[in-house]
Length: 279
Image (cartoon, rainbow, N blue to C red; front, top):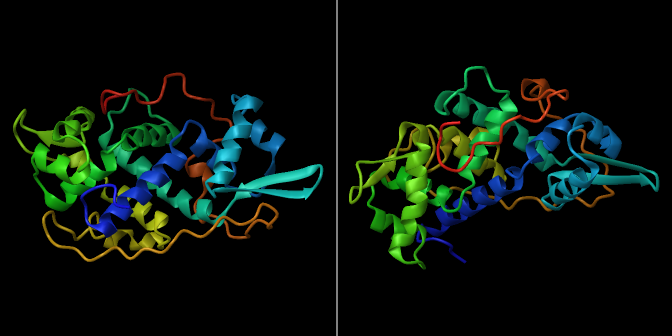
């Protein structure tokens, strides 16, 4: 069933990307996925790599990642259980450096450099808010658009004024520009810069190779606002393998140390709070 007034293929695309973001944005999820980017690990081995996570916090996180089809739990015998990536998680990891690149270019940087994992968490906080993906998709596809038209497209079943709280947040976050009340909205430079991130997330969530991201009909490198675009051909995500299936031998080609140090402690300041692109 369509969730927005966008064309059906685009509506499905936005829904898939929103679901993908909802899988990885909850606190610690990305760190757990990165800790598992090597061979499968026992529970205690994962806990050793994330010492600030209490046991009561780690178990439900692992369960939710298993339910999402990103982590596989394998029972070798009654006393030997390991956790490792599914192929879906393995193909997701190369998207994360694109998020870091965007954050380093567009998010305000503190006096000292932030670890890449913090850049990822701050970026995901911005992108997972309700209606954000649909609004950004519409502005990218249409160009400058009034608030009323955005409301008709993004939330057709709600009153047209309901679009303004998320729009004000996007303006405060620096992802959308407007000259003020009554004026149309458009993507900011930072919003336009999300093209590689959204293109890659769309390709991944549609079961496409990440190399297809540059050809995305909305966020692709050659797409211009207001121009008609071809449909984004998608394939259903594969069904998660049964828990007892052995771990795939496929491994990421990028180095996990590029993003994550197992000795890295949790940040001392909270992830980017609601209210602005500045940290």
